[in-house]
Image (cartoon, rainbow, N blue to C red; front, side, top):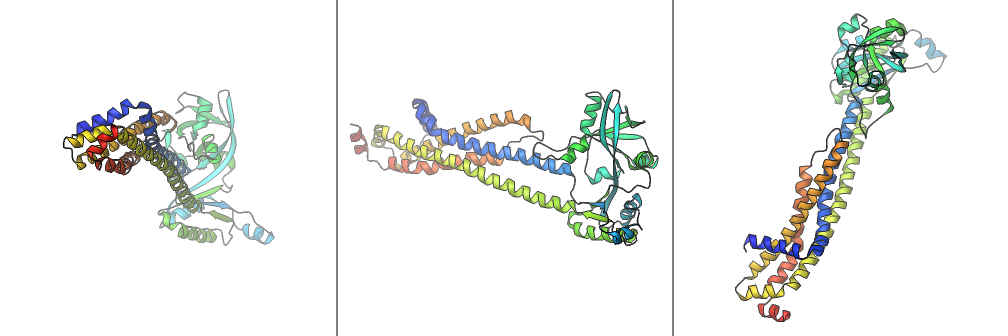
Length: 412
């Protein structure tokens, strides 16, 4: 019943029968490593996926686009309206209520040059609210402010990739780039968007383009009467998306004199559905990978049962001698059960160590990090110990019920 004796005996079995012990513990090692590694890896993948989805920036957002007439009747009706204009965005923003923020946006293509480097890029004109609506962050510098918009500021924010194409590793802030024939001062550089698991062409276009104040783009490049590309409208609460669409439709119909020359894309609702689909897929992966790892542990438990039975057969003299000098059935039972648990624990700890080493190596490929899933780690070790108990019960009972005389006679 001495714990140190039990530990010594278990370790002695491992040392004296290295090949057999290795084959026995292999299933437990693989099972524990699989559970620890897979749960942590999935956590890393989930973090990358949600970071990529968060970069999309469509939570609670609707886009209002211009709509082309389908026939001559609609064309006559649409002639009453000038299409989407900044005044429409100001009108929507003034309504408040469920409308949290509104940002008019316009696109134009232009040649951007810095020194001898030239790029044809998409230039986005936007107001200060746009960055908040799309939940954008800056790698360096700042986004536009109200002063830039009001004074037709010739300032720009470079996309993550465009900055590197124009400036390389050189600092870009407060440097000048030319958009067409006009010089613009760089006041910010956008963050890197997307991840290894979530990426899109829109991310690439945004990172390879640049942004200027909307008033500047309309004054110097597109004309101040040109219709906007779209208006981004954000709800104060994601649950209000349906009401937001109805209110936006009604307000714009009145503002455009009954002409429904616009269409609304409820990208926020599409994003909610996409999140639910991603959650379902990730849950299914957890179940599948957990099942595979569980089977590995089960196989390891069966191997442990076989080895314990073989061990008892080889140690009949030891069992008979112990009982002959006074060891009780309970003492023999506890000894062999504890030995089984110690063996499974050794396998679990080795497996956890293997998983941790693998995660340290893989961590470099996960910008969002690859934290150790403590639940998975503790669960894997706990399951391994449980298997040691379950599969050690029968050998322990068998050893405890042996008669001393029969055990000694069988050896002789």
